[in-house]
Length: 223
Image (cartoon, rainbow, N blue to C red; front, side):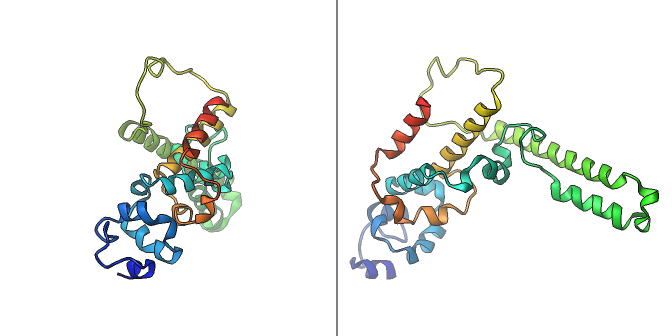
């Protein structure tokens, strides 16, 4: 195999990179060159690679760098179903493209574009489509919350069972959302192209220890 030959490993080396890529990565991730990463990215998933401490630490270091992709404004538009806020109050504009398409149709096509006959029809159609799409997003989000709840891997205590506050401030909602996105990124649960670069970039190994991930969560709890 090319990777074994490149690393100077015997052909019968175990774990085998073809049949057991995760274990192979666990042993050799720090010496695998980037031009071999695509092969392993295709044979493994971000969630599967989470068990590899080096990759988890790289993701953790990446989140600590405050990347634009995981910032509140960017993340709530990239993963709108994770954002629990009201779309009309700080949430992403859902249905914007569809609404604009209907407005343009009314302005340019309906009745030959004669605005004296249209009035505010374009704006109304655009608004209706945005509201329909926003409602679809809300329904889909509620469905996913029921069918696919995100449950951190930790023991349940009496404190965990205590009722959560009925309301939270916009700042608390923003911070909770950012934390959720970063946690899901570290655990390989986001639909994101970021894994294709972060997981294989050894620049995030600098000054990295296996305790960095736990320390990050402890710092978040204290803040």
